[in-house]
Length: 345
Image (cartoon, rainbow, N blue to C red; front, side, top):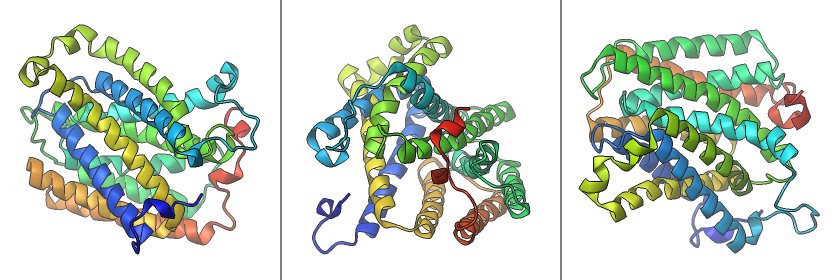
């Protein structure tokens, strides 16, 4: 798909898309921490995240209407509706994993700092590999086991002795927050695997815009129901934020993250169209460092020496993993080599 028309004249598509990715991704991280942390005190992350997904559904549908490049292929006999059996078997598992990933991650902001969230979430690669082995998408090797072991040690070092700036700094808060991020990381690994399969093998999800269009409704409903049980719709409606900020401003606060998430997805899609795996890896690591730096500058997050060493070990391990994948790409099966049906057996 030609995307050069999206860039200013004489601009570098990779640089432009990386900068856009950074802008929207970092904005979402800072915004969610501000919204769900003690600063605003809008402590309904699951319900609010369900509304974000509905915004994504509306924006993705609008994008399909306005941008023919993202629609189903013209020569395809497919309808935008699909049999419910197919939806339940292929789309719904990915939607539920995605909902758990995003919902648990956003909920953790109530208990831990942005820096700690970012560091623990970097362990997602471990679970990507473990899910890959479980689904026979990855070949288990000594080097792969070593990569997972080193990253596990790095994550333990990043969490060890970390003091939260939120609440009353109770260890219980850090434990709950880190547990939520780990749940998010586990689901992120599953989400990544299933999403890759959808993008490569499912006829209705040929690009990320179509994927969002089909995933977001189920994600929104799942999060909305879960949020109702865990957080309570009555408490959400009675929150003081509605009175302090006013209804129009509060509604805008609820919509903005969905818009940012959609723009971030577009920038990621464009970046994936131009950049190599190594470029993506380096850009991703630099983004993690920027997030931690912004957490320190904006929210006063702090790192101990052992936290910093653990972070360095984890980032270097991620680079090693990507080098490993580049050198083994010709012999190790990847997600694109596996049929969707194998995952659902």
